[in-house]
Image (cartoon, rainbow, N blue to C red; front, side, top):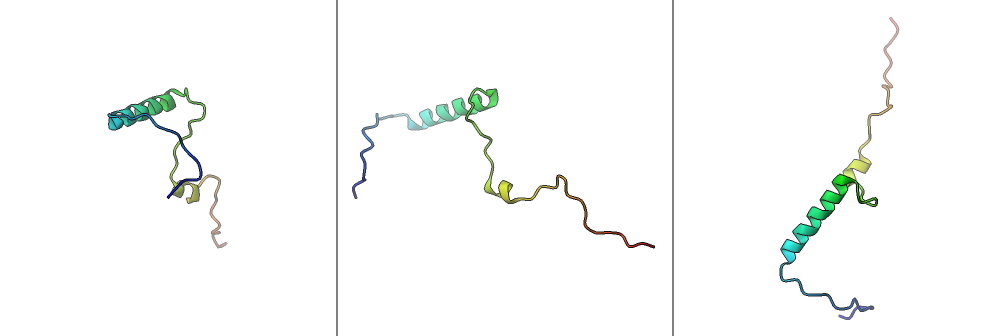
Length: 65
């Protein structure tokens, strides 16, 4: 199957695992140091859907005695 666009040639990397480990380490260090302005904290999808308890008060009222 042909692609609609050509991506060009990519240089062969015989140590792809080592390169990937190095790139991840550099990225992690940049995030920890705050050097990367575009780095965002990775959040799981459930973190966006889970309600937070900040500012929520109980809606149960005690009956007057």
